[in-house]
Length: 512
Ligand code: NG6
Ligand code: CA
Image (cartoon, rainbow, N blue to C red):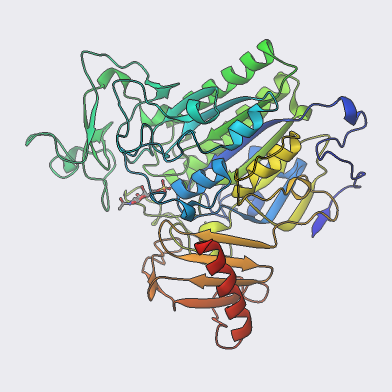
């Protein structure tokens, strides 16, 4: 259902063709902005009061703010895999959390949203965190050579990446298919074993760290921060954590400017894949101390600044009304994810997961229900929608907006929700949605009902609100999200027929 702030407009097809001279209009440019580890309650437009996020709020004020917007998993790699492929990550092995030397999890034979959009002449770019592996199957990344296959082999024209996630090694940019600024005389080595006895680590040099670790994250040190994994060499290529957001904004602005210069008549697709607010949270110095929440809050404000820069660029280039911006997150929130950055101590009354239970790593709503906003001024009318939409639906929905037919077998789990994403009156979201953690916990939502299926008696629920312990849940648990949005009362025994129906539906997905 949609709560509207203004009058609705006629429902015309194709989905993007809603303006008056629709026939002339091109499919929109698309910017997908993905936050990292941002929870439902982490923006002022979703109820946060400890700080303000004016630029993201402006997207919500001018667009559709979803109250049932989901990512398909409660960790990064599987959500991103599904966002690009439109396929549930559980259908492919090895899509849990990618290690530093992971080969490309999306090999060229799998078609992505970028491949689809290229059929409609989109210029495509991914800028920011990748965390989907690079290189051949069985081999992994050739850090000193060509990092192929990577984004360029799966539909992207432009790629400027943090190859893994920044708490994992190495801290270098990958520009197109190569490590940027790599000096061949100082080759980059990345591995799982300590390269020499005297290699400094977060354990041996703990006193000298600028941010201490709390669990894991105690191997190679760079920029005063110890990481997961080891690396040597590549010194000229290494970045400062503080500069990531600035660099990605600069690369994104350059991509849009060049696109508008070269081929303004064709659309572009930009996947702006932020690292904020993932650990290690090291916002630029100018954002440090901007919120009472420490670096976790300051990283949110930094991301908000990034969004402001992207939308200001659209304005400057005169393409605001030709551009659909989608804002989403890759999984729910976590406070202590391995570094002592004050997130736990400084949380105050802030509810990172909003009203929901759980967070990152869990299939409770807090892990997967996240901010989700679509904005396309002049086409989308401002609204709040409680239709169920998910990041996995972007391939089919964006293909529909671009009028691209999806070949059989491509994006098999992606549903075309373009009308709902554009906030059209009466347009419906998903009927059923399956979500997962990084391993073998799953849940299925069907309307008000949600069934969890856990492998054992416990699920990892390392998360918000100091709820640090593993949460005990039965193997199957049924919740009524309408009366119990916090998922506290298991109704599996009371409503066995609903539990059985959903368990069977889930089984069909998992084994199908
Ligand atoms: C976990 C890491 C965590 C984070 C996560 C991936 C430990 C103890 N924890 O294994 O810090 O890196 O993986 O996060 O190592 S994600 O958002 O990229 O999926
Ligand atoms: Ca994440």
